[in-house]
Length: 174
Image (tube, rainbow, N blue to C red; front, side, top):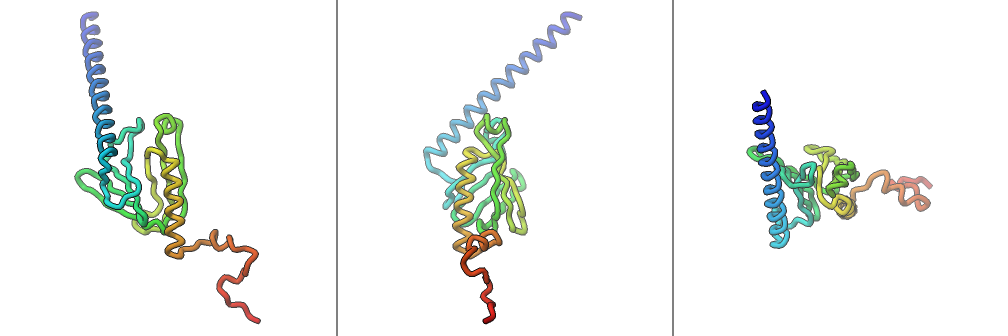
């Protein structure tokens, strides 16, 4: 009985060592690929000002979900065999919220929740992205620029002009 138990423990140890080696090799390949892509300046989308991949809980980009942002739209690409391409115009976004769990903080990632009036995507999340605080600020700035450029106003922005003329629809009667 002791020989069988010893053999099982040796097999488990060998499996564990193989798993650790495979994980380390995968991390090295991922880091080398990410660094070479950054150095080359190569982007998936031509006019992108930000790109990232959904990352796993360890912050490694092992996913088939890709995010990108240009000056007018946010793009979401998901899937390996059946790929879905979706986009949202920035002026349709109304709110950006950043959440970071303890694990996400440890690995330098975060999740953005975006409220949107887009019919196909609605509210959505950009999950486990690097530099999430900077990306949140980038989104906020670009959304505000596009809302101004497209003259999209909300009740919040109408309230900014208090004290001026409160008759926004200019139907005052003399």
